[in-house]
Amino acid sequence: MAFLLRIELPDVPGSLGAVASALGEAGADIHAIEIVEHRGDGKAVDDVLLELPVTTMPDQLITACHRLDGVRVQWISRYNAGANLSMDLEAVEAFTAEPARALESLVDRVPETFRSDWALLLALGPDGQQVIHATATAPERVPDVEKWFTLEQAQRLAHVPDWGSMVLAGAPVPQRDAVVVFGRHGGPPVLDSELARLGHIVALAASVAAAL
Image 1 (tube, one colour):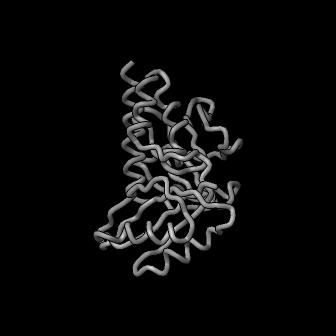
Image 2: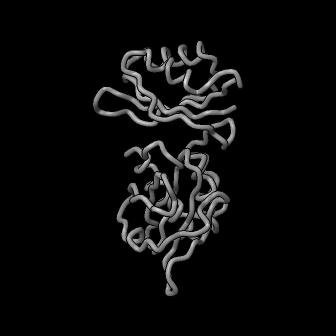
């Protein structure tokens, strides 16, 4: 059973090794570790993709991590996107291979790249807003959200009541009245570094599409 664990830990040599050892002793089989953010307060944020046997509860991992000084679990959840973390470069390779569908291809890769549950491309036209492309698990009904089309940069989006406890982020598509949005059910919170990556990769996909 695959899980994604996001942890905050001291940004010093040996910290990640101590966490990996603690998770291993708790029964986890680690598949991949990705550094998400180096913060200026001496802390780092890492994502750990791991497998747990059915006899091990996720709470055991949290307990194992919290026994370590300065380590805090921000979020843990089942991870259904597969056994490999997709990097930004893989997303870029995917949409540059299909320049005519660059933005649509990017949307398809956002859930893996940003650990989200879904993503969609929303555009504003003469007849109002329209979902141009969406992943299979995206909400079927999107409320009128004109303020999303005024975004000047990638940012966290306000709660949408109809979508429950969804954590949202979006980035404007340059030179278009359009926005790429992703959602996470219940978390984790979207980090500043993730917003920077989202803004950059959406702009790059838009430039690839515009070059045709």
